[in-house]
Length: 147
Image 1 (tube, rainbow, N blue to C red):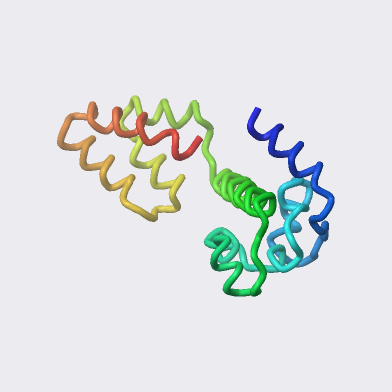
Image 2 (image 1 turned 60 degrees about the vertical axis):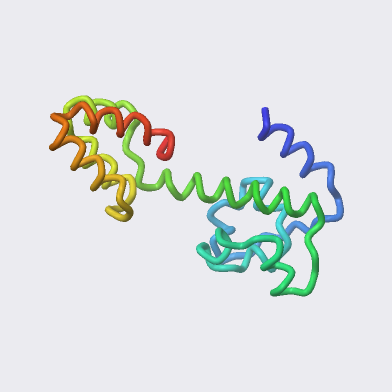
């Protein structure tokens, strides 16, 4: 429902410039309305730079202040791109749950995080020291970060 309202809001705004820039991160997500509604300068940024962008850093970079609609559009586009980039190394949710039940959730978490961060270490230690029950609970609690 939120996404539908956001798309209606974005489509009703005619002052935003629509641009499709080739050779950047935006071409991968060009079919998404949130990405199309971004100013061209934002579409040409590197992926990490775009995901870390805030309205205040945009104002420092360009000297222009983002309107409320542009700020909402920016945040929606960042959320969409982040969600889609996480799905690139996804394992199925059912397999994740099966691995968690059998005590291998640390492996699934490691794959999902590209072996970065501490989630998989914590899960491995909980699985070992609490005979699998702690690892199962931890895996099910952290599952919302992945799906």
